[in-house]
Image (cartoon, rainbow, N blue to C red; front, side, top):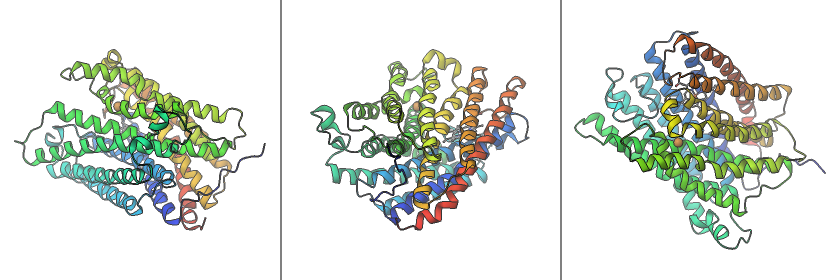
Length: 489
Ligand code: HEM
Ligand SMILES: [Cu+2]
């Protein structure tokens, strides 16, 4: 059997389309490295290897959380746009507008944190922004919230543009999800996986972003007119609905790279037009929306049926898409003449990272466990697992493929070494969070008890490894960026 050639440029993508995607990925890569360094600083501080004023710890925590969630979204959007654009007429202007709004929002967020002192975390839990007990000023909180709002508006525009273009080509969102093939006779003409995934994401993220924008605006009014108050339980529901959906959507966008690129390395198509695949994506569309109460399991005032639903759906929500993805990856890889390079290695790692990271998440979504593990480092343990080793590995894999295919980047032993350093460092790093959680270390604490400090120190070492490897990937991407952007292909 002949070796497949995974480095074929996509004919539907011209130079200007490639340009905007590369700009998304370049921004994500640069911010990713910076935010990782902030993460290491927090770990060093908890491990008492670095002395940081506690108020700065919470500012760094806020910036790291917001920045990482933001770039996960941006990188996912870049991947989605690249593949979706090959099927529908997406607008270049909207894609650029989203990036411009993103950068404007970042500036406001950094201003709010660095100058205004805002340190209320990316979840801006109402009424915290307006009650800083002297830790930040109103302007700082407002700058942060307006920054979030602007970024949200950008993503909303992008998803609406996806909806417009998808409906223009397929007639309706149901058809784009492959419902005629799912519920009727499967004529094998279901839309491509990129279309199915993008449709799911636009549905859930539009709802999430609108809820997020609503509570951000209410919080902003409350900042300046304290007499205007919101029911805190409603506020928390809106915030966690938004936060949960947004972060989940990052994976559902980024996974398109696995569907499209892995088959090019194995020479086998990814089966995406069967009923299992389509059914999984439709089921996840509903479940991602209704599962968010697993963030409110400690809120005894929340209607009980919602908490029960949050637990039960947590067991099933991620599973359909995860199962078709993990199973699809295994089938695709099994005895295939796969060509290993940095991109294919990262994409395979990402399928593992996502699948493995879901397990500690489901454990925590069990009410009796959550009563103990909630607000321990177990929580950052599970989400760093599927974000660092899942979503971000997908993004880095896609970036490696882009500069190799369009920029002719060559691979060296350093890339291989960096891959293993990333994988081992990443597993070690999240492992220390999970062990810390099992030992009862609270999350979001600048100071740790002496018994927890050894794990903080090991985590710092592993984090440094991850950063070193990521630096290699990102520098390599920037080195090939110019050629990748300008080449004719
Ligand atoms: C080298 C890589 C990374 C390091 C060293 C790091 C470190 C940290 C640390 C120390 C915390 C605070 C944990 C605590 O509560 O005590 C944290 C929180 C967080 N990290 Fe990371 N992280 C890394 C990568 C990532 C990535 C790739 C993402 C997402 C794409 C991410 C998203 C978050 C989020 C959302 C929080 C929660 C912030 C909050 O509690 O408000 N991190 N990280
Ligand atoms: Cu959630």
